[in-house]
Length: 353
Image 1: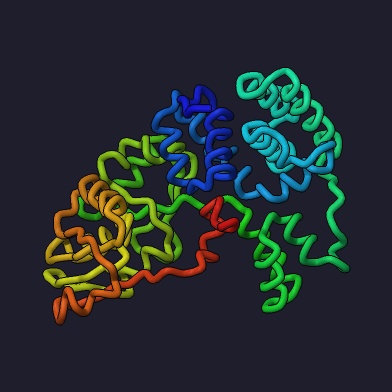
Image 2: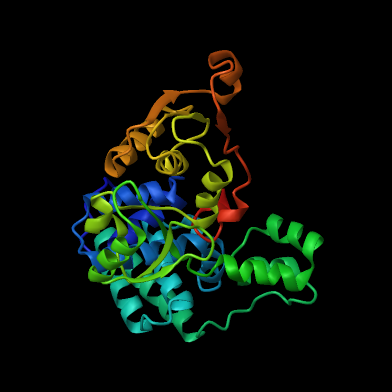
């Protein structure tokens, strides 16, 4: 079925679930594309994101739960119907503020668009059966099968749960799984090249957000209630950048002087590079490198929005730094590839990659 614009929050969420679980797309990139081409208001965009990310996070547990009520394997169903069942089940199991009848009705309506009479009946029947459990599913016994229990109960990969149990024990592993499933805060970095923390706070409050200072990052603010960040006028004017506190603290640890030369060897999408420019009063040179040309474009887009001029993008394999830039930099920042386990809470699909 060809891609088409989404006309509702649930249809946008369905398209994201399909792109991630059936085609292997990255959730954040696919969601941006779907929302950009869709026909949704701000509130609908926020709901679409919540629905989609909840479904993707719980993907494996949802498949297990749905299998309890299917007469044939889920893998034998048409891909769009699999994704519809996942989306409906996520609302029934993990989104209690959405009434079960509404979740089922809306999912069945989408099944009419993406399936046929037989699959519509199947979606309706399976979701009604799941709703009757009220979330009381036959999980494995936590005492005798702790890996299976924690992996299904908190939708984490079995291999990761097994590793954490060996390292940390049961209680700490369960706590880790629980915190990874909580919604992450929206943290932004004030762009002090254009505004101040106080002025931006007032602007964001006028846009409907609740704003509190971040705990550790000097330029950090925590936002609630802003809706889709990218549609905020403050965002579009380049007054802030969405960036976790931990990421913001890296630039402060480096503390580059204005006028210095800095190499950011793994720079895309530009969060740290633009922050370094900000701390240097946009004076000096920051060589922002990445191995992929399309990711360099992300840096350029963010620099234009934020009004940063001192960043120069370079197509760069960090293994060649010594040859290409001998004795060039006053400061070097390398955000080396890692497991990504520290961002499971924020990146819906990271746990399954």
